[in-house]
Length: 78
Image (cartoon, rainbow, N blue to C red; front, side):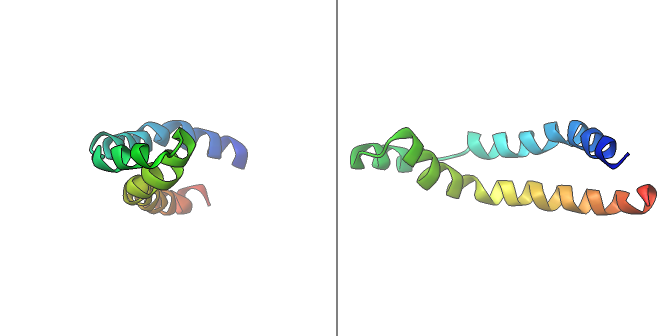
């Protein structure tokens, strides 16, 4: 029962979270990537040290909004 609810909630809200994160990825500046490339960073290092820190505010916004929505649904499920 709980696993089914978790699957349905994930299926329903994944597009919303992905839109927020993809919107954050779309507005990233190119300068940090150029600097990392000049410094010799690999793709993995660029993701870990440039992309994730720059997208982190968008990820946190998505987590916050999703948590608030999950708490609103708690009483209905309970």
